[in-house]
Amino acid sequence: MLSYVKESLAKGEKRIKNNPQDNQAYFAMALAKIVKIHWAINQKHYFILAKEASDIWDYLEKAKVGNGTQNYDTYFLMGLFHYHLKHVSGVIRFLSSALIVPGSNQKGLQELELAAKKGDLLKELAQAELSSDYLNFEKQPAKALPFARELNKRFPGNYNFLFVLSSTLAELHRFEEASDIARQIEKNIQTGVHPFVPQLQPRYNQLMGRILFNQEEYDRSVEYFQNALKDTSFYNARVRVWAFVRLGMIHDIRKQRTQAQEYYSKALEVEGGEGAARIEAQKYLINPYVPAQAKS
Image 1: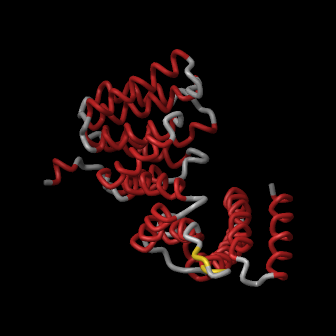
Image 2: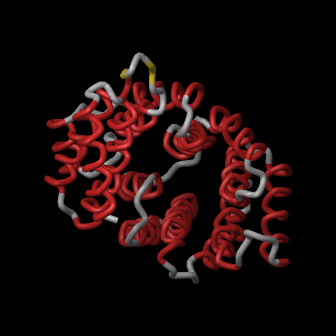
Image 3: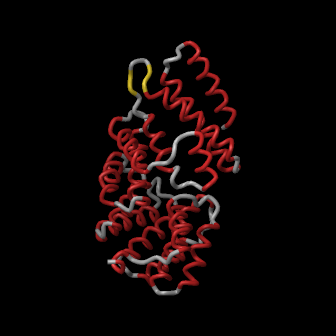
């Protein structure tokens, strides 16, 4: 991967030398640098990460307008930077803010919305990102729903969008619709409908646990979350993190604080389980989870 990145950057530099206003070349170089950022994160090379992120930002600024055209796809990557710098660990956030820009949820969402409306290559990715951000970070499922529906309609064979749509409906307490989709997912897994492979079973268990959790059917919810935890495959890391977090939340609801903290701690120990679930685990490890209706 890094070898291809090096080759892509070399080709980009050559094009820019011939045409300093080549916004497509700058944008392609920014995409190539994303690979190096993922590598730096995995290797915990934070200074390299910050330097690469700074280069990407410079490329994106030059890619926004060039050759007399507006590249709206750049707003997808800019939106990712602005939005998720608020959610990364302290050292990465400090270095990135010093070398690039400070994180901003509002600005990030605005840029993602622009890419989702006017983007070309990355329009659907921006829509998928917004559906995830509104659902998991912003806790605004009503804003996530239009994106989830549109993506599911456009890509009916993509099970990822089915999972997101069902989860969004569950958060809106539209349980019948959410459960109908979940049952269809389970049926497709059981009958082997392509591309619903057996490896999706833990993800289905986590989805059903989430639906039942929102219905306050905690005993049945626990069964599904425990089943989701039985699969320890690396590709189901995020499933396990969410299962641990939800189990912790259930124990908090039942005033079993010690057990709740144990589950939150387990969530933070899962390798590759970054994202909204880890943020939830960190938050509830300090302050117990309280259902929304109990707060009001």
